[in-house]
Image 1 (tube, rainbow, N blue to C red):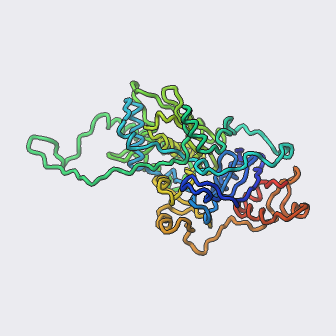
Image 2 (image 1 turned 90 degrees about the vertical axis):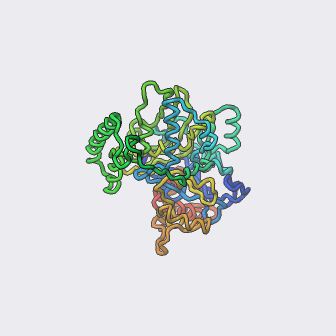
Length: 472
């Protein structure tokens, strides 16, 4: 994946007439999607494509045919700046913290909470796609450039099937977790209420008075207040929107019994005698390292136990998938890595104000075990007809009634990015870049206008005028 402004995206469109096996409902031919092979792809083009329902697996980019596929897949994004962890999320964070600091394995919790696999939506759908190009390298040479932003081992994530991945696990290799196949456990019941009896004279605490505060809590509050002052100074020059700035500052304030944020768990200082050391290697300098595909490595006491693949794009961090060592499944690494990636998104936002969302791939309401993504709130789903983001709370009642539905309830709304001028679609033909209107006149043989029209309607006018559609 290349930075915007470099060589243009070059894609080869395949259409989507054939059905493939669905990894969710196991229908042998019910999974339908449009697809194209990206010989090169800029981060801005990919950002715009996922905002129109596309998703990548390696260099293969696909878009479910929402009104026909057996399990409609709705693009979901979490508003990272406003994210508030649930009790089940905090349970995972606390479990990791206890394991690192004290070596507590919590065997009971591991049995109750199966490992949540992470976010790769193509791997679970065992459909075949073209792994070889119909384009000769000589035809692409004039526009082919090696980009320093590309990760050396990026090709390792090119759409391996679940069967292959399972064989890897059996041979002792790290496991690839496909699309978080198990839901996040439900929150604990609060039906039992605690009743405080009045203390007897001379015994117990007076519940009518505030509890005594420990000296270490007072010192911690002073430290956090000082940190807040530094954050306020830093944020004064930022371009945060008013509501988001207030929200972040409120979350940074130290208050008695204030709910902890994910940063309180992830970036906490451990004692010198901590039993373990967990390191997450990621892009060290934020967006300065460039946009594109990156690997976040999780090292436990010098041993790598998980690798998360993410795309850093102009407006978001998009999670692709996670490899993990199954010996550490009791740590719920899928949930833990997702929370760390949300925290990472917030960090990147400080240096790149436009980057403020965390994309988790697809939300599949018709598959109960895939509904867990909706627990990362606040989140939005992408309307498959108008490509407008809609709060998930408004979408759920609609999805209860029908697997596929238009999420945008404004009946007058249309796709603002729809194709308006087919002749302006950019085409790469015989090493020459030209608008489709010129290519159409030069083309010999049967017309391909229907295929080009379908491609342009799916990628939208903006991308169709930026990307190069290869035509033989």
